[in-house]
Amino acid sequence: MAGKKKPETLGVSAQGKYQFTVKLEHPMATFLTLMSNAEFLPQEQSAVEKYGKAYGTNAKKMSYDGPYTVKSWNGTNDTWTLVKNNHYWNKNNIHLNNVNYQVVKTTTTGLTLYKSGKLDQTEISGTQVKQQKNDKAFKQVLSGIGTYVVTNEKSPSSALLKKAFNNIYIRKALSLSVDRDTYTQKTAADGSESALGFVSRNLGKSPKDGSDFAKDAYVKNTADSGVAYNLKLAKEYWAKGLKQLASPAFPSPSPLMRTIPGIPSRNTYNKLGLKISKAAMSPCKKCQRPLASRNC
Image (cartoon, rainbow, N blue to C red; front, side):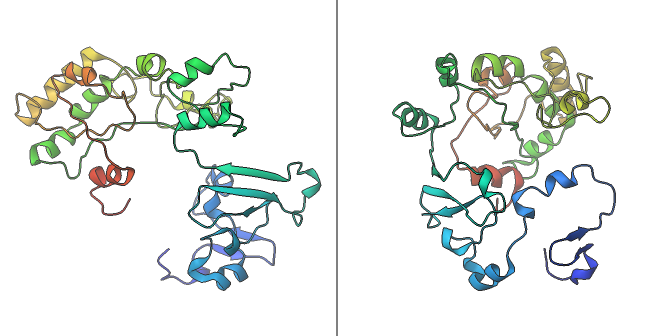
């Protein structure tokens, strides 16, 4: 928010102490769902004004209206405790008095702590899933998170690379050369499922028949689905893209960014005649390169 417009021009208004009205420019089916996200939750004005820029920087400089309050968090430590809020309107139906949280930076550490009785719940990944899936405590839940490859279309290392990454046939060839089913079932082997598009599975229902919206929105046309595997078509598009670039081979180096190990593999793109080099980098760097931005 730039703070340049008067509040009454923003389409929002307070109707008394307990009602907030938003006037939409057009119907929005997801509006009520979005309102439950943390960034839209109301803030206690007196607390915001009291703490100023320090508001929310530690457990003591916040206000709470939910079933729990946060204790023992100084803003940087990796552990904290949720304590039952006795002022919560429905406190009689809150049956846990305390919940201890601990930041675990790797799934290996998490599983070790869980096995030693120091954690009640932890997330596992990769080969851990295969090893633990027969444990009676194991429960598999789709996370709703999608992983995808980003090409640096705005500021790659050369003008020719920029032209290549902005070529629709080059990008389609890269996508069509990735066998997502093989990756999820054999490489990741952690319960992941191949994507049907940007919408993750089981996130919503189709307004037509109540089926999974991801399946309803899936584009079945191989060339345009964005998630299909067709190596023959990939090679055709690759050749067509190189022809449009007036280049016999893809320019090198190729700074394709790998969001998780194993996808895309070097062998995947080698089939197109593309050599892949990889480099470790922080999450912020991974934002900066494709977006050509100083801030993530």
